[in-house]
Image 1 (tube, each protein chain N blue to C red):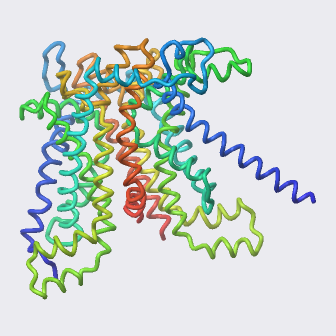
Image 2 (image 1 turned 90 degrees about the horizontal axis):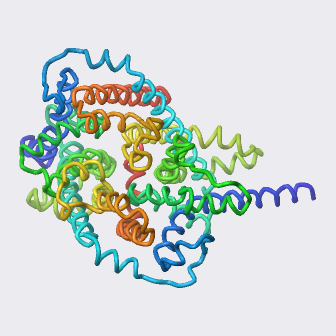
Image 3 (image 1 turned 180 degrees about the horizontal axis):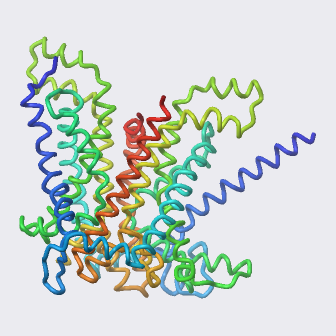
Length: 278
Length: 287
């Protein structure tokens, strides 16, 4: 009897804990979401409503009509897409070279790739600005793509280690003996096997580029070239009384990576953990 | 036997290396050089001053203040927050099924992948003195509204970063836990081991290397995290002026590039120390 009630108490305690955690995680999201669909008069009421009495999408239509948000959205897509594509190509080439081949200086290179990780981004901001302006890339979205690739590719190579390392050498050798050309072997046999790892790198690069703020804030000057995070940050200081508009802006910035992750997230979690073992 | 010739293999790695050299290593070396100069946009100066910046730095009250808040931030949000909470969540949800687990996992991941600017805005709105949800909720139980962001700035950025980043550790540990053979825990159940004993004697040793990897990544990420700037601008005053914000202020607010570079060199050395320390203690654990 006594044991049973103790057990019950424990179950209750556990649920209380889980619900508490859940509400801490969910409440801010929920608050922004309902605030983005409430009409303005309901929004500024002294006692707020927890479920909107009236639903409206007027804040969203105002957002796209009155601001450069559509342009920001496009810029972010452009930067994130190309950063992703180039990172996957470079990281795969690099990973293949380091984990499947041998040549002098290879160990040094693989260590060098990890070392890049300890550079604080603020550390390189000042000289990088000079480098970018030397290449006439200031105020050009490609400056962001280049720096995103430079930051993501080393981590990408490191993530690919377990994937590339575990594919048996014999598979490549057999294909080579069969007389398949080198590139064909790579393309037909190796890439499908390494695909989960490359997907992980792609997702990492996309998300990192989508959320990047520091460089996007410094390297881009023109309003019509700004990315969403920078746009939203400026927006917050510009319209700091128009809560409906701000909440809609925050939702629009957050939703694309969420949708993206909903589709491919499970590969990412698998790949990320496989890559960090050892 | 390898498919590619040595030459081809080197050509494969070349594009990546060129990028890293031009846009990462070269600027980093440049920063080392700048840290030895008095480069400033204000007085338009660029002279070699030796280690003067570093001597100045070690006498600067703001630097020591920044060191203290940075360590508070890293220890509070990276060590105790993200790593410990991530581990706790992963262990709690291990072998559980159902809607609660799904919800918890998905929302935790969501808070990790949405842009920091949005998270910052979410929190600013959540903590707002007049309209914020927190004060509204506390109002129901009779607590007077407070200006959380200005009264408890350190707590705010620490809790904010825990909220934002714990999902990464949770995901890492959740998958790590799946590699532990179930028979270990079943045996422990048979001999009647307590929960704490199971955690200490079975889970913790098996997770040791994962915890090490997690600590390295999270510590370095937190040390270099600039986004609290969006929440507090390093203030009020310089209450939340962690290293990256301190560097940013010196370089881009006061235009003291030489001095700012010296600060970032110090951050780099601290990062290096941490990485080496963790790597070493992980290696020691293996033997």
